[in-house]
Length: 268
Ligand SMILES: O=C(O)CCC(=O)C(=O)O
Image (cartoon, rainbow, N blue to C red; front, side, top):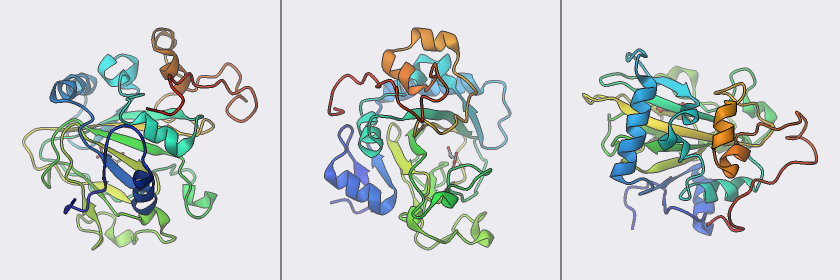
């Protein structure tokens, strides 16, 4: 029995129960995706990526997978990708990959839904459709509060109303918010419509998360204009396909969409 009320799930297949929970909450948490050694490798890569950048506030850097193999390997991780396929079907792309640091002793509380500030996804219809499915790998421990945890309002992807503006910078913004107590190596998978905010990081070390955002193929990429041709040449066929660098610009909308060469039929 899970007394924490965190919507836990297991790596791999998206079960019927996972679907139900995701539908209700707008997120699930997949435990034990990365081992300690794998976390160390990705954390080293994340630290390299952020070297030379300011460490004053939350900072996200994109497309680290182009030159960091430990990050690249997470693009189609078998613990997570079957769930992305279950939610989207067979045609989707990696719209962005953000490596995010919440530096030691810093805070960036700001409640928001994911999407485009240029065009609020809520304008697309109700309920706000799933167009950015985010898989967040916790590279540092966030199993206690004030470790730069994600805070979320379960079910808020179904709300017709916005979180009141006056509460968006508040740590405790809503009586039903949840502070995600996430173990290192676990993954949060969440719907763009869920209201969320990072919690302050009161630790004396930097908090790192690695986010992968999957979208329908027609959504413009946000961490890159185009993928590095050298990366496309050397990566695997599945990862190349997930980059969405099509030879013809109309491919994401029209016929001739090349099938992503997944290795199996059922996503296991
Ligand atoms: O704390 C993080 O890593 C995520 C920040 C966030 O809420 C976002 O990128 O939308």
